[in-house]
Image (cartoon, rainbow, N blue to C red; front, side, top):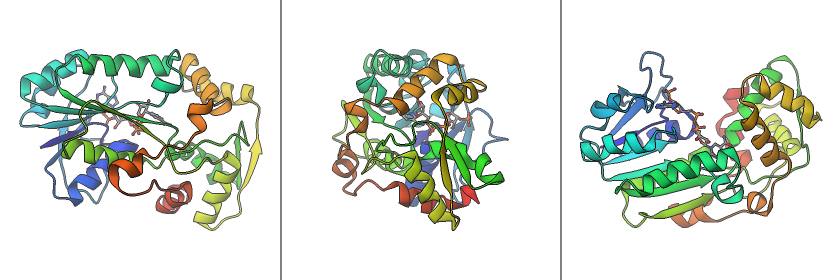
Length: 276
Ligand SMILES: NC(=O)c1ccc[n+]([C@@H]2O[C@H](COP(=O)([O-])OP(=O)(O)OC[C@H]3O[C@@H](n4cnc5c(N)ncnc54)[C@H](OP(=O)(O)O)[C@@H]3O)[C@@H](O)[C@H]2O)c1
């Protein structure tokens, strides 16, 4: 049995689909089963649990061999519960920032989680993806009222990753041997700018869309309405002034899964309904 946390999120939702398609026994963790928006086409056992209260995890962990783990900041206590329940293997959704910006808040928070897991005595694999294609979901509101998407850093290109590819790597690491102690840096197959992403979504939904550049200061004001200031600053650094590690394409998706990483155009086609 595999426990998938983040099951209502971008990567965990895709992972549920992959595992169920292969007939793997899966349990989906959420803090609120009554409100959980799980993929409608996936038939799965849903359990309530919160990493903030490790005692709530005894039932979710019972009978589980491997866990797909979201970072919570509470890894030491969470993994004590997991080990006590007999869990053997954990695959953490970490971030490229652990390598590319180890001193940033995002890098430090995820590295702290990794270190707690390294000390847990469980078998571990860390997934360190760069920017997700799903971040463009934030454009939905702009596209509901017009054909223009406004973002900063119009011409900065990053090798955005399809979260389904992160899920495929997680699937392999959770279900096959040979991945213990590995940290996989994960990217998409080609760098793409916001301008090109907007055009690509337009093609996927059959509309002519236009990108308009805004200043980093305007973006900071908008993002600060719903994100902590330190996270906003780190995110703007990452998308505005990427370093060499953040712009390079790495082949790990294909090396681990045997299939090439999918392009942003493929993600946009797979998810066109999000923007309609
Ligand atoms: N976006 C990017 O570009 C990017 C890049 C690299 C790494 N990352 C990392 O990827 C992760 C986000 O992944 P995602 O986009 O797939 O997730 P997401 O769509 O943001 O959803 C978050 C998930 O975490 C679960 N969750 C939150 N707090 C929890 C808690 N206390 N206990 C149990 N579950 C909890 C939520 O479950 P319920 O609400 O159902 O309880 C939800 O399913 C973050 O760690 C982020 O740093 C993101």
